[in-house]
Image 1 (cartoon, rainbow, N blue to C red):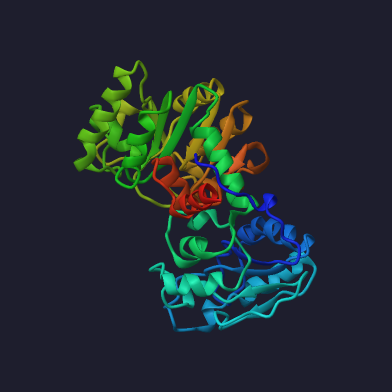
Image 2 (tube, helix red, strand yellow; image 1 turned 30 degrees about the vertical axis):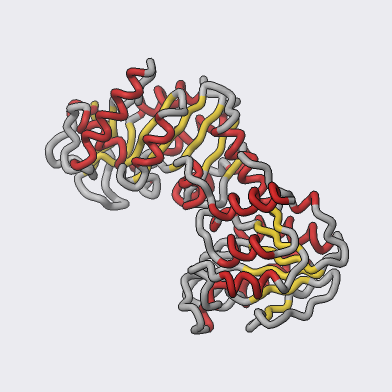
Length: 395
């Protein structure tokens, strides 16, 4: 990974610091924040700037507003209130901020939803120059949007006097780099989810770099069918059976394999009160739906995890939201948490499973970025990171 300038390396005292954070938090129907994880994760950058004596401006997107059309539900007002509680000092919310922001050293203001500005999504140079004029130092601390080239994530970094990575973004890149570019071997990837199609490029990319690949969830059904096993009425992508066969053959040719479930937990309908029945994979009936891996498979996967030096985890291996089909995901999660491997986990469903089983403190690194995490796994260049590396190279 190319070198980038870190916020901790930049003199901040008395300077105007513009932080692009990811404060896109879930809210209920009344606008109340239901999970403030992203806000809490973004506060170290703000505190670093404040303690250095900087004049601090923070902005983020929230939801998917229409550019140029403000609606009350698009406002960052609830975020400003939560930031003030966390920081123990007032956080003024500033609307219509492109023409200038009055902010004193040691003060922090929150700039209203950046996606309300025309040209944000299209990465307008004109808009980016306006933002760059507001600051002496631009800080990108929003890993969750690093895969998008937008005015606040990419454009402003081209024109700001100094462009650097905040502590959250830097930590994400350090962890991902450690997991994928200098991993302790064996390197194991656990990739699960409902569809192969959404993760095929990830699977293909990882197949060439990992020592072992475990597939789970609906993805595993496609691999099971490709291997000749009955899957009943289970979720499957028939048009990707050849791709699954190709991946399994490629793994074998390198002396490895993609282990498939030997037993599964099935039901007849997708419902929270549906009882789970454990069956050998060869015994799945025509009207069965596979919703989880079975206990023998869970033990086999736990043994593989225990031998790993690095584990990358994305996706639950079953319908863990329903208790009857949660044991597989819990077993895999606990095995990763108990292993001595460096472990990194990402993706919304994965984080929900980690929270459900209270595994947060036992996973080495939990990524806050969904799409950015997946694109990094695919080996794609993240535009917001690439521009920081470009600026560092120019310095």
